[in-house]
Image (cartoon, rainbow, N blue to C red; front, side, top):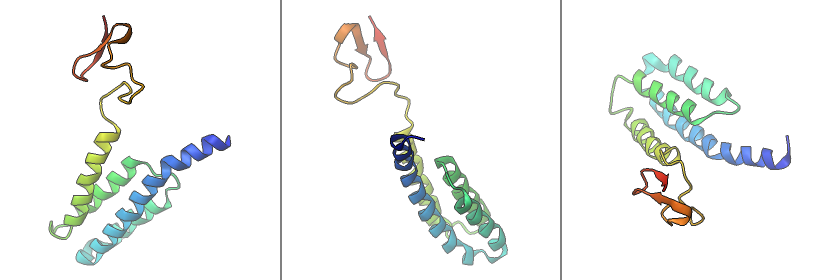
Length: 125
């Protein structure tokens, strides 16, 4: 693997690893609140930590599973808040725009017949 490819992959994984660390911290605080589910909570933690290259779906799945194990909604509130925060973050990362929205974008500039219909779609005229 080339150095630039490796660096790009690491840059992609760093924020996800931070999400894993934060999620594990939240889930560990949940474990004492539900002692009857502690074994399952520990299994969730073990699975997400042992994943060498976790993705955002893995983080979301682990958070969701931990919320489902909690029979006390108040105990899982910090996890639910973080889960909702990640949903918002992921929506901005994986939105429906298929075109570059930056300053180099041809969208909305009308160049070469490309017209943006209020960012819903770009069409050639």
